[in-house]
Length: 187
Length: 228
Image (tube, rainbow over all chains, first blue to last red; front, side, top):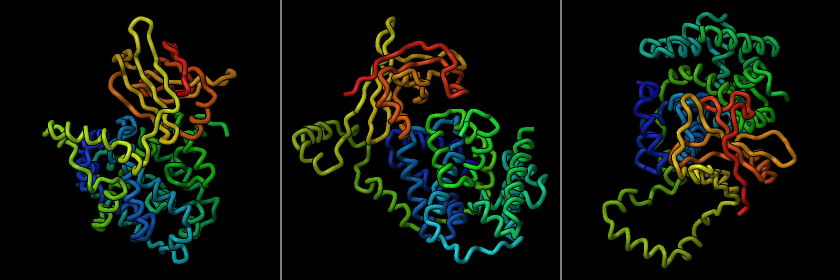
């Protein structure tokens, strides 16, 4: 069960948060924090920074719950976006604290693991199924570059370093990969 | 940077979502998002397309201290349950009296409650006041209360605009609720324009707001903006 399956439960919780119901925030946290913490750790690579980001996320959710509108995507998409933006801001502004001295080694199994998790989710979630189908259509290096940027919050330069490829090539992998992805998802 | 080219906007939106924009363009684009519904929509579409990747990440239970940190940051840990007042009206009344008596003391020890820097009442000659608007510059928020519910025509939304002095293009403040209250965020850019604005306008736009970032539908009401 991922938070994405629980959007119907999350929406009323966000509405209650908007009206100042602290119990709703706690329920929202119980339902979503582990998923967001997983996402944050993967980008920030340090538990203390991920925890700091997680706290920022729910403080921000509480303060901005009034601004949540279905037009901004499902509650889960909204929460993930807040979390990823916060993590990326922390990662970029505190580059030295996030341990880039010892960047995680790129091992192909990581990519397979990400793919198998998506495959598992795709069995019961139509959006995941569509995204997986479209990712599978990309050239492998385009797919790797897009996933490293999205899941690990890497910059073009960092993706280039990780995949040992020239920067210009990586930029075009990402650009073409995302263009194909968009075309495929909207097909 | 030209943001009115849809292809450029979409490529900026996807790089923003992935976190690939360098710091300055990222900050610039984030500001654009606070008032451009077209940009906001492009970003939302990318967030939606890629979210299943995040949903597939294996969850990790955060330490207990994360929740206590949130409670402390929001001052929720010691707050009484919100419903208590409803359950015990007499107690609530007594507390209200105490609050009034000690209000000065109480508030002097907490961050002061901000007074709106600007107010405006959007009035329709036929039905009377429709929206009460209060802009808070410190909280960077525009509070909107609907005085008389105003249903938007099917498939459309009411959008609020600043008409800056000197004839510059209108700048959106966001969508107005058809009923009830809403709070709209004010970006630094919007606050800047607010200081140069004496008139607000409401236009009828396609549902979700103007697709161009400028009013496209008829302006149905205007109202003076008053510095309070």
